[in-house]
Image 1 (cartoon, rainbow, N blue to C red):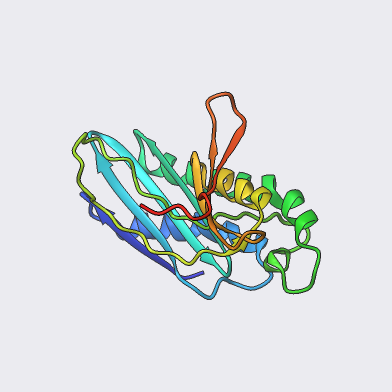
Image 2: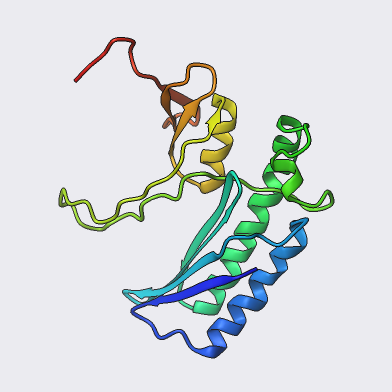
Length: 192
């Protein structure tokens, strides 16, 4: 797996690069073939906390995890553990959903697990200003509401934008405060 490793407010030493490569190579056992696209690893230090964010784009899915702690190596370990847990957690659900040949299930080995998450999401900013600090572009994959909820849970966020396969409309699923899920749909004929 090819990794693009970059640092934010930290110098990425050869020792850090080697450690990241070694730890993330553990994930290769979950794939039938190595991912064709490059994974992104961002190492940073903010207010004394060492943060690690890993994004691995795959055809139709995206694995993503991040962690912050007092130690960079501990953060790297925690991110790899989170990615492995995500993969194992969603294996059964996705395999049930995708039984046909060439589906997401085929990206991963049978004894391993699979993970998913389409949306890379914006990092929370500590400012209360109304300023756009980052723009993300992505292709909306048609899916049903159940799959969108799985994708949202996979990336660990409280909302997920998707193209509803049943209505051909852009919808949003979100996690409610009571732990249940909500769906936002556009009213027919509504205009701003």
